[in-house]
Image (cartoon, rainbow, N blue to C red):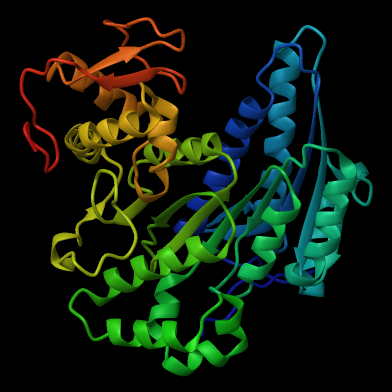
Length: 426
């Protein structure tokens, strides 16, 4: 099992940070910026209740080469402050984020170091007022943090940053409790899938670590058998992906890998949420941060998850969210969407919204809502397969940008069909 590789001690040297961890921190910073804009969209809104939880906070500062850089606690604090200032300047009556922060670490030295960093920052007056430092494990602190969020207000707006070192420090049981107890939580969880694959044995299911991620004997046997198959790493990764979907209680997911140039290991950055818009925004962020993320699979729908009938040799190319990946994604959607549109309009007895079409299939794809909209427009303009309607039911023959409530239906008289496995008369 991997050991904790960062350590802070007052008076000691700063720990060195790798490039993949810098990428994670950049995701944290940019996602908070988007998050605030999304949950406070109305100009008349003057405040937002928010709770930020950093479950493995560390000491708050690193060494990257010869440069001293901030760790996740200061990044999160500064990102929320920047979002508040931005909206306050834009709105006539100002804007306030009523944010509380929980920084949790089981190392006393790490908490001491972070407290020293905060005391020297612009946030020093908020320590022990809206900034709470907890020398404990996240697992033990989670119930009281959940209770705090419940008492704070009715919306339960909360972001949990769980940047664990391995794959079992956060149990799926705790994640299920977060989603069962709160209305609008989001969890960003790192998961060292390569470490699990390398160290996994059938007896792992009976260990504390195995129980934390809901492994059982039958599942362990399947994983062990997969290790002997061609393309084993791809198969196991996707098998584990489905297992995580089934055991965390979240409705929406983005499960893409962070590249690590330092050691060529795979780290999942799993974004778990109860809202499809949150899932879409995180996926858009992956596309914006080209060449930072990858997934091992196809470009369109049904791109992730375990399928024993698919030859893994056909799936092993890295999908890197670059220009060619974008083209491949739209083209794949053009091939697949006609069948989905026919199925959904048939079951609903009328046009299906773009949002419903997307949310029913978004967890297993790198596609975003704008890319799906682009594919639907292509089906209308180039292939003449569909008609697009506005929320009011009126035909939109020239619309280029589609929203969640725009609708689509098959054309009544189609010129030709290039659909996925379904041809006229079948």
